[in-house]
Length: 558
Ligand SMILES: Cc1cc2nc3c(=O)[nH]c(=O)nc-3n(C[C@H](O)[C@H](O)[C@H](O)COP(=O)(O)OP(=O)(O)OC[C@H]3O[C@@H](n4cnc5c(N)ncnc54)[C@H](O)[C@@H]3O)c2cc1C
Image (cartoon, rainbow, N blue to C red):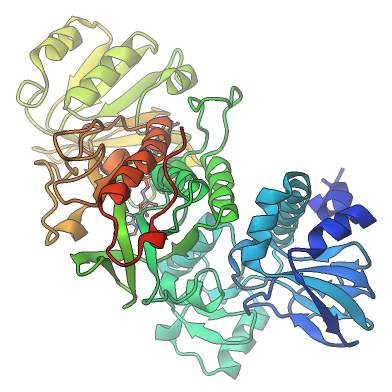
C-alpha cells in the first residue's frame, strides 16, 4: 500500500483554523491589511512580509508558477505562512488573494514575540509551520532545479548542500531528461556553466557556489555590516546552536555563521544513541533541525553558507567573510568544531555511519558481534578502541601505516593489545579500496606499503581512529592561542581574569570540539553552549560600552 503523505495524514494540524478567541489574541501582534482579489501576497524566492491571519475572504497557496494546482485554500481563522517566515527569509510558495481579503499581517519579529507570549497558540503555529515545511520537502515543492549530469561532483555538491539545509530541490539529468536538454539549448548553456540551477524566481545560476545559491533562493540574506550584534557565533553545530538558543532566550542579540550547513558533524550522524532523553536514538539531522528551528524561534539570525575567514578587532570585533561581507559583534564565540580525519578513498561517503565508523561504542560493537573488523590507527584512541572491540567481536585487524605502535601509543595500551589473542596488527599497511552496495561494505582492500601488494578481505566494518583536525586554519593571524594540534586554548572554569571558555583574547570564547581538552560529544558541546552564555554575561557586565548603557543585555538568570 502506498504510504500516505504528510498533507494527507496531518492536514488539520498543517492548516488549523483558529476560534474567535485565538483570532483576537493574534490581532494584537499585527496590523490590519486588505488584499484585493487577484493580488499576489507572497512570491516564491522573495522575502516574506510575515504571517497572514485571514479574517475574511480566501488566500490560495500554490507551488511557484503553478496557479492551477493549489496546495491549500485558507479562509477565515486560517493563516498563511512557512517556517522560513520566522526569520523573514524567502517564501517557497506563491500565494494569491482569491477574492477580497481582510487579514492581519504579523511581521517576523512580532511572530517570534507571539510564540513566546502566547505559548499555546505559538505551539499550534510552530507545529503548522514545521509540518508545512516537511510537506513541501516531501513533495519537492518550491526549491530550485539543478540541471547537470547525475553523479557529477558539482551536482552532488549542490544537492548535498540543499539536502543538509532541509531545502527542497529537484535534479534533472542531462543524459536522460529531454526537458533538461531543451533548457540547456534554449539558454545556450556551455559545459563550463554546468550544473545550471533554475531558481523559483526564474533566474538561472551557472555552476554557483553554495553561498551564491543560498543567497539567491533566500536561504540566507546579505549580511548587514552596520548591525552590531551582542554575539557572533562561528559554527552552527550543536555547540553553536546551543549557545544561540540560550543566548537569545537570555536577551542577547545573536548571529550564527556556518560555512556549510546547520548541524555540524552531528548533522552527519546517522543515529545518535547517547544523547540524553532519546532512548530510541535520533538521527543527527533531525536533532539538529529541531535546535536550528528553536534558535530561530527565539530570534537568532542565521547566516548559513557564510565562511568566516578573518577576525579583527576595531571598536567591536569584525568578522570578514569569504563572500565579501562583514559582521560586527561585541563578543565572539568560536564553535567551528573539528573534522574527523577521513581516508582519501573516493567512495567512502555512502559507507559512513553504516559500515565505516569514527569511534567504537556499544552501538557499533553490537553491529559487529561475532564478526571480524578492521581498525585503522596507531594512537591512543585507536588503542582504546581496539582493546574494547576485541572484547566484543571475533577478531580485530589493526591496520598501521608505520612499523608498529610503540612510537605513537602509550606503553600500557601496547601491552594490553599484545595480550589480546584476537587482535592482529598489520604494519606498513594501508586501506586502498572499499567495495559494497547500498552503504553496506563487503570487501576492504589492503595494500602493503613496501611491496605494493594488494589483498582483499571480506570485512563489513571499518573503524577509523586517525584523529580529528580542528577547523582553525582561519585563525592563523588572529593572535588566538591554539595547542600543537590547532585546538583553541580556553579553560572551562574561571582562570585568573579570564572568564570560563574565554581565549587569551578578551571577549573571544571557544566551545565544543574546537576547544582543546573538550569532550568530543554532542552532549558536551551542547553543555558548553549553554555555559558560555553565563560567561558572556559576566564579560558584558565588566565591559559596558561607554555612552550606551541601554545596550547592555539582561543579567544572568538565577
Ligand atoms: C559521523 C559522526 C557521527 C557522530 N556521532 C556521535 C554520536 O553518536 N554521539 C556523540 O555524542 N557524538 C557524535 N559525534 C561527535 C559530535 O558530532 C561532535 O562532538 C559535535 O558535533 C561537536 O559539536 P561542535 O558544535 O563543537 O562542532 P561541529 O559539529 O564540528 O560543528 C562546527 C560547525 O562549524 C562550521 N565551521 C567550521 N569552520 C567554519 C568557518 N570558518 N566559518 C563558518 N563556519 C565554520 C562547520 O561547517 C560546522 O557546521 C559524531 C561525529 C561524526 C563526524
